[in-house]
Image: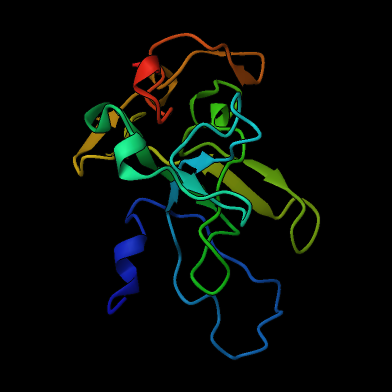
Length: 170
């Protein structure tokens, strides 16, 4: 990528941190403010996105995405640990993207990364709305809580689910 700034949302103010473990003198590379929906065949109730992370699975082929204009495959995830020299951080459980227990920017929660409570996580947002990229190439700003119905910490299996690759859930 010629311009790494393309991957950073101007509203994303979360500082990236590689914990000083930079063996190659490259720093973080550049911040990444976006993530891909996750697919894992062995976890259909949680990893029902489009893109595979683990070697055991392939991403869903374009022909398998039954309703591309209704299938979000990119979303804003603002976190300390998402940068080019490492990787675009992701959520294994896709319900986290729509869960009311996850904070919407500018709010965030913290976890231990390089020290105590120093990593921040938030679903990116602009005036309470999140930008989503869809499998057909369009982008739409939406209330992330409307992407799928979350009960407890998981998707309840109902329709619509705009994060699911299958047309059956639209």
